Length: 351
Image 1 (cartoon, rainbow, N blue to C red):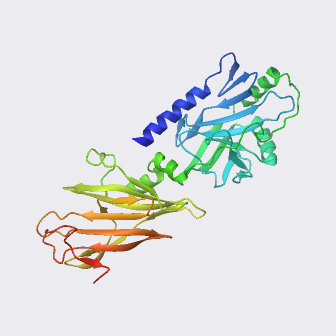
Image 2 (image 1 turned 30 degrees about the vertical axis):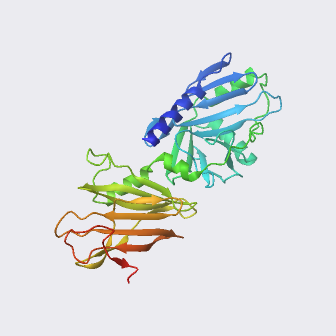
């Protein structure tokens, strides 16, 4: 629910900021609009960012210029409901031109707000603005803070007319086509990536992987929708996601994954050792009734036996560098459905 609320608030903020300020001049050109305000200068923008097969108002492409006579054009892309990972390279490409790589800080960086990413490399800027005026579509490729990849396509029909309108409004017809970094803005503040990841909820590519590769019940089904995922950072670049898988009696089972957003990113399903009184040590891809402490990096699980012939067990693991290490595990000697975690003997560490 938190992620949905965050999304709604972000889109509402985009709608509000996209509105024209009082007393501003504005005009529309195909998929682009242009607005000028005396103090803040002029901005041409397109909110028609096509992503994931549909038009989505979560993205905006903007070209702006302040009212100063010697100011240059700035180019920015706003990722409204998701947050681009400012520590990972991004890429822009106009039509079939070679892609332009945007390195963190040197190629692009957030200014003003954490969602507004400006291109800051002079060489890239001046290549790109020329391509935009002659092109049909611009694609922005990036990873968000959860490691989810995004390709966003913006139509360029109307951008040339919008910039010409701004030239005329600012009395700069015939001025050189010059682009530069946003020297009039302050760098955006640093953010807590772990908190941002938690607000975003489960990444779509992880949910797709979970549905395709497991025998779990659909997380959105009526039976499972009441159980929330467990999300927590285990390191600066890795996040634990525990997705509800099954539910019965007093037990909710979870499949656990690590999503790595560092230089070598990806999804890693997690497997754990569990002790069974009838079979000894076995492997499992499901833990029940879990909790995760983000401060101590401690993961706990307790399966409650459902009657005669069923084995309960409880375990504690702690994250160490790149994996969860077992700290202790308790289980009954026989699977007779009796007892509880407090009365089961510890099988690890063994006495």
